[in-house]
Length: 234
Ligand code: ATP
Image 1 (cartoon, rainbow, N blue to C red):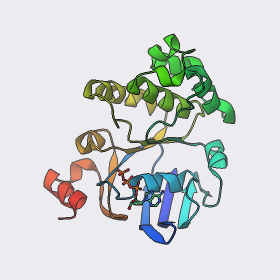
Image 2: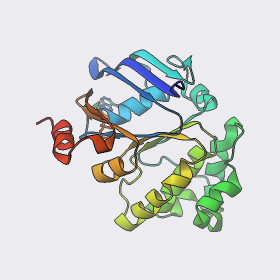
Image 3: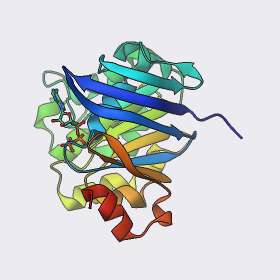
């Protein structure tokens, strides 16, 4: 059996003295999509921050492609092949669409993604390539954020709340492209408030509740009631 691309063991994380992740463990195989679900404050974004080196106060082990990445900086982790598409997009407001995308590619990792490939995925961004990123609609800004992540040619992409603040039709369009985004063996961890969408999009899911895993497995292995109980802690 092949090695998991990502392996997390006994992960704990703190903000100051407040412990918010309690001994999480899971593995992700190459090419798989894992959805993280859980109520507000369950720890989903914190888990993503731990994986990509943005939260220094943590213990346990995180291995990526067989290498322990626990103490590496966020920049070093991008260079190793993990990209974060952060909650709220966090584009560089003073830069154009294309400049934001180019920044994502600065790690110079080889792979299928470059400006033309991103514009092929999101043709509207090519039309708006010279526009300030702040002049775009929310959905278009989300496309830039995804494109910027892809430009680093990651092996694992972390997608945090893609649908936040977007109209349903825009969310539908972005999710329709997910198979193209995670094609070519790219693995993904998806944080999504819309549980049905999260489960429909994933091979596996983890449900977090107050920093613990309350349920995990194949979305098809559980009833809606079982998943609701794990989500709400009933
Ligand atoms: P949401 O869906 O609301 O984004 P989440 O599942 O992503 O929720 P986290 O943002 O990871 O949850 O938060 C986990 C816990 O850590 C919560 O109790 C939250 O209040 C706390 N927390 C998050 N960020 C910080 C911070 N910067 N400083 C202190 N506590 C924080």
